[in-house]
Length: 382
Image (tube, rainbow, N blue to C red):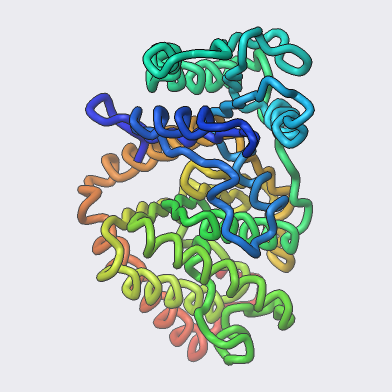
C-alpha cells in the first residue's frame, strides 16, 4: 500500500552518470541509499541483457532523475541522452554539476553545484541537499501538476488492440523482474489476469473458457505468459489486490462464465499459502468494459472499452511514477471503501471472496441444469 505518515515511501531514484567521472557518482548513490531511497543506475542491468530496452525502463519509471554531469561534457553523451528521455517522460530532474550551473537542456532547472577541488567534508555538506524530504517534495509537486494539468504532464501510450495490451503488460512486467525488482499487483474490473488457465494452450479448458468466442493458439500463449509473469510478481512481492465484478463474461454463456470463475477460484487458493497479503473485493459496480492494471508503482494500464470477442481495446499506459502513485492512492481508497460498505474486514476478504465465488459457480451450474430440463419460453429473458 502507499506509505502512511509512520513510514517513508521508498521512491526510486535513477542516477545518470559517466563512468569516467571518478568517485562522485558513487558518493551520490551512497548518499541516496542512506536516505532510504531505491537507487537505480545502468549498473543494475545484468551483462548480456538488452541495455537500451532496460535503461529506458529504468528512466521512465523513476520517481526522480538525478544527473551527475561531468565537467568534460564531451564525455557526457549518454548522460545528455538520458536527460532528454527523462524530460520527455516528465520525470522530476536534479542535476549535479562541477563549478557552474547546468546549461543546455537544464538551464531552467535548479541543481547542486560542486566545486572542482571540493574536499570530502565540503562534498558531504553539498550532498546534504540531496535528502529524502527534498526529493519527496519534487514527486509530490509533480503529482499536483498532473492533477491540475500544470507543468510537464505525463506521457501515455495507447495499446489499441488486445494483442498490444497483453504484449505490453508481459514485456514491461518482465523488465522489472530483469532488474531484480518485484511489484504488488492491483487490478480492477473483469475477473483479473487470474482467470487465465495455467494449463498447456491445447488443454480443453481453453475451449471451455472461451465459450462462444474461441481463441487461437498465439492468443492463448500470450495470455498464459501474462499470467505467469504476474504470478511471479505476486509471489516475489507478497501482495495482490483485486476488485472484480463476478458477473463479468456472462454474455459468453453459463459454461464459460462458470469456467472462468472456477479458474479464478483455483488461482486464489493456489496463491493463498505462499503470498503474504491478498485482498479481494467483489462488486457489481464496476462496468464490464472497464479494466485497470497497476504493477507496483512502475506503470499502469487503463481500458474503458471491451470487445467480448477480442478483449480490451484502447488501453492507456503510463510509467510516470507521480501519476502512478496517484492512481494507487485512488485504488486503495476505493478498495477500502468497498470492503467497509460490505462489512468485510480486509484480512478476511480473501476467504469471503472464495466462499462467494464458489457459491456463484454452484448457482450457475444449478441454473443451467434446471433450464436444460425446463427451457424458458421463446423470447423470455434469461
